[in-house]
Length: 290
Image 1 (cartoon, rainbow, N blue to C red):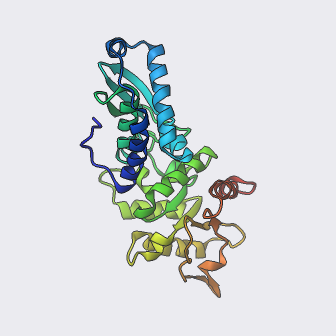
Image 2 (tube, rainbow, N blue to C red; image 1 turned 135 degrees about the vertical axis):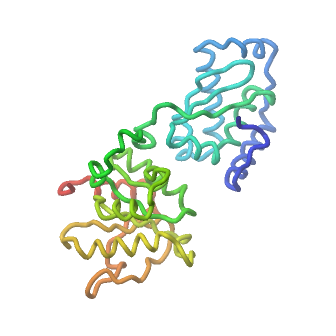
């Protein structure tokens, strides 16, 4: 259950403040007829209510966040002022933590302060928006589909941008390997990650001012392993692709005789995110890519 006492991150609180300012101007208490219909809402009524809530969410958030994370949500039940909203299984927890307060505030804006929303996980993943989230049986054996995936290396401080990047790459038909999606409980995670890097179709190293500022990170270990793998591969085909999430300086790392990491052309998402993602997706799926 998402309620007023839920724990929110700083960014969610900032979003909630934006909604709160809007609420002060537009709060509409439900009429007696509205309250009565809450206990027996028809599909048509539910659709109308959900469209109003989505309209408030769109006003409260930037367009990209709304489109990627909240537009795919579905209202599956509505009774006595309680809404049950379904989120794709592989993004449920992230959406609840990141946007739970904004969703609750928007629901109260439409239905009044007594309304509550519960966010549940879908039985089925959403392959279009969030990429294919497979079941345990679908994911065995790993070796059968590992080589088709693009390994994404990042620091946890950039998780929001990385999720957005991966979601948009999946929209363009790119299969990505992200540790938060692929690692299973009990995995020897270092062995699994090393194998995913070695067999991956590409290695994306997501650099940013946050990754640059960290003194220690597992991303550096992944980059070091990827540089070794790069040295074993032919030089006439791209494999290691630096990605700039925010303005920063690429690490001064040697990748071969008389070659540094900065000699590799990077994908720049700092100036025009949409155009940068499109160019990156084209490089990952274009002619000559196997």
